[in-house]
Length: 141
Image (cartoon, rainbow, N blue to C red; front, side, top):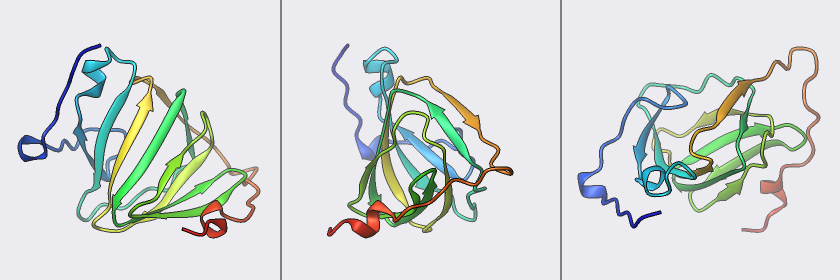
């Protein structure tokens, strides 16, 4: 492991990444941790909308903090959850989910371990996940 710093002034966003409707700014954590963790700032690409496909990530940890705007997800066994600036969320490993929409100004920080992980598409044509009341609606924040 080694020390790493990433300043916004010199930062570049790349259109290459897991989702085509986002741009990613690598924060240098993957290199500093030799692949144990990846961290990046994600922002919405103008004119691009989420495809809403169900999927799951084969990772040990996934944490997201919303910096600006809002994003709406749907999780298996949870239902729809809307996150907004100041919201943070932890997605348990392999939870089935999909993004339903986001604001044009969405920016969030995502941390995932390990840095390289597999994303699997999930077919819910036969079995739609049962939804319960959203944790966002239960919170008082």
